[in-house]
Length: 479
Image (cartoon, rainbow, N blue to C red; front, side, top):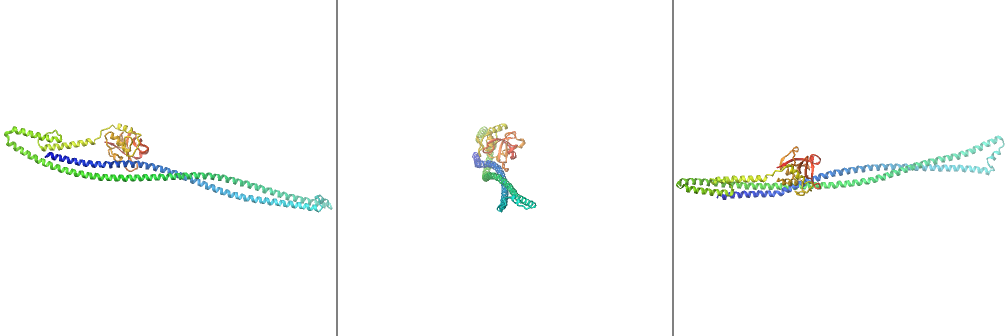
């Protein structure tokens, strides 16, 4: 009867263990999904940071192109004003030239008029019978009349000469002024042509700058769209990760609740069985004592029978528990069996969780052998990895089991300060500035091996300078 109760108790514990194992197996895919989501978010956040950097660069280019276009526009505006001023000056020069040409024309007309007057006077003198100024002199009546006529002829001749000469001088001056104005006008026209050519050049430059501005604006718009899309993906994966974590937590709580119920039922059954066995043992002891007293004459026969019974009881108890200890009563044998079964279970559990030791330098060397492997999100080797997949694969090689997420791996061992880092330690980073989302394996000399991102793959990086220095978040030594 005891053996039947014992087997029932063992079966109940096996059922409870099976239920707990089933619950843990249900949680594994969710944990894997959450881990992969964490690595995906890490990769997307790195991509987001890269896009932000490119966007800032493109915005700077846009601002530079806009400023240059503004400078060219200002220069074009200035040259346009200069051209307008020159056109006004040319118009003024044209008006002055026209005025001078009119004055020349008037002077020439006056000169022609005086010339005609002189010619008419000479003709009149000829018609009157005076052949020349000589006849006028010869017709004088006296010496004084002669002198008078000489003075008159001289005065008339001088007046006519001066009149003609003055008109010629005026004409010469007017022509000189006109020529000067023409030269000035030509200079203005030449200046206008030079500025017009400069304006054409500036217009070409403005066209190029406007194209540069349009290209930069297009680049900014494209990067903004990519940045927005990446941010949306991060938010979506974060929401999925949160939902998966909540579901995992609910299922874990339900599994724990069911396991607790199974343990309570098993405990109650064990208590009942122990009480029954104890009562039976007391009854057996009392009967054995009474039988010994009443049958003292048949001692040898009774002793042989008792030895045989004890031997049978010992073999029955040893069979299910594989214990080598002999028992003088059924109660003692049951206690020893229960104790050794518990010890065996504890030893098995300890053997399962213990990780084989590995040399730190060998872990670092093994990690370096994967440098150059491509980055693939969710990959855990042997030819491609994501960040936590790489560390998970390397430590699995030495018998150490790590979760497939950077956030989960930081709790897989004792925390290590940055100054106490040794080859083989895991180093963690906050790429987004929030939670742990990147991990690598320290190889000494301030360097780590890590599966960085798509396109870069598995490389060696410095954790004390450059990009990773400001992202460092801690380290641990897996156990």
